[in-house]
Length: 352
Image (cartoon, rainbow, N blue to C red; front, side):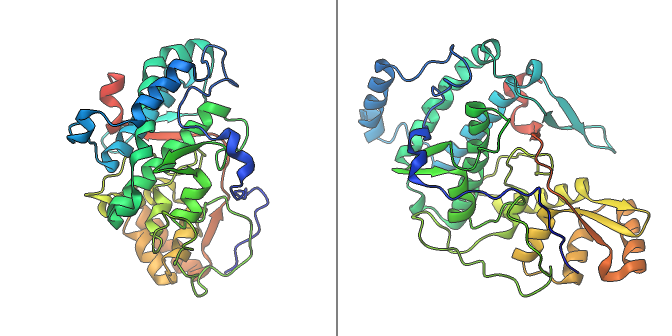
């Protein structure tokens, strides 16, 4: 079974030093969006200087926050900001079909005007303060589980940050926004490709056999923070704010693998489709996951089946029975701006 070429897929461009002037470590770089948000003033530079010099509380460890908790706080805060900057500060909710429980907030539009930015000003200030703390983080000292959770949270926060800085009209999220993490400027492309070793679902079009021998998951060690090997489940956690991307969740070092499996199950269950009982419609994220996880056809079907409802499973069995290994149709990646943010992490901040 061959994957058809998809000319709509976008290729992340490698990070180069020409973007140095676009690197940002705080939200005060909102000049392109609104005159109400000013660049760093001398007082801001003074605060940055004071921040770089450890206080007595820092030396005593009283202000210490773990890198993972810091990444969680940054992502939660960025989720709240994105929701506040959405159309009229609101979004519709995704609900559990069986229980009716509200699961996530849907964002399809950002309104980056003076009024909305003013309403989010206190959150933006706090975000800047948290991002500055990343300069003292040492990712090389983390365990694998800590790294996975940390970089997923940072990746998703970085993408949101880029949309707020530059708007949603262009695909500029890969390289233009960056955080200073432990002295290294890191952008979205760095996290995806060089650190986590995950190919985005909108990578360049190729024609290849899905179940051919998988490519090596060993990551190039050229980046200081690169993992020793990739984790295929990350395909269900990394969001670039597109319509076919997974829901944004906050990941913890303590439960990262279980949380990733839950994200996989939720994504497959809510994105799988069926056509005339002969086709199983699957997004390209599952395609990339299958390749990276070295799944053969039977293993892929078992993985998908284990995530489905009974009704979905019955439909899948009918399709497989009729067309066997030729029943999958891969859905093109949709690049329209779209977020689903898990409600659990923003409910209190939004008073929902």
